[in-house]
Amino acid sequence: MELVKILQEKSDIAWEIYIPNLSIDSVVFGFDKSSLKVLLVKMKETALWALPGGYIKKEEHLIEAANRILKDRTGAENIYLQQFRVFGDLNRSEYFFDGLPDSLWHKQRFVSIGFYALVDYTKVNLIIDDTSDACEWKSIDALPELMMDHRNIFDKALVRLRKELNHKPIGLNLLPEKFTMPELQKLYEIILDKKLNRGNFYRKMLRYDILEKLDESRKGGAHKAPDLYRFDIEKYQNALKNGLNEGW
Image (cartoon, rainbow, N blue to C red; front, top):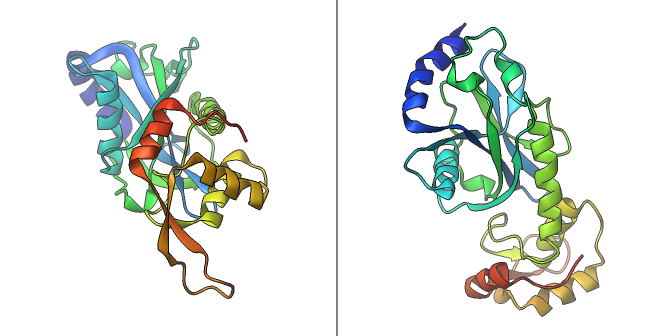
């Protein structure tokens, strides 16, 4: 089996350079104006899909490892990353490698640190490595079967993302630089999985004072062209740091 051979070749190197028994799994969200998507990897010789993940080098900070792992998979830098939970149930991953030598790095018990990431999916270059057959964006409403406990990790990440909307801004890493208020509202509705009142949404977003209205509008529609906005980066970053203090 090609995958087994690859894992065995990587095992000795992994013991040398990575911290034992710790891993990272990332739930990478992207938005395409009609659906929220998550980045998944299809492992070789299996029908199962996985979240992108990896290991922490012995001389590496945790956030550096998370950024490196996602850069290797997407080519993207300056990704918004948020650590949200630790996953360490007994046998959460070992069974996947049944039949392989117990000394194999990948068969050890791993406690996984969960991150969620927000990216503009149009600006990433998906990379298929030697242990995978595919790397694709999947709608969160039509997920394939995920390996190990990755469905649980995804579910917990989505819950955390929804909670974060109550006190942090969102959109800078998911929308294009210029966007309309209906596009921003659509993003919030898809993440929250509920309809929002248009007037209330507009007033709340403007009250946050993180948007800059442009002297431009979106052309080409049948109706009045909506105004374009962009985020005021300094105010947005301040809101990320200090919170918005309002809920949806």
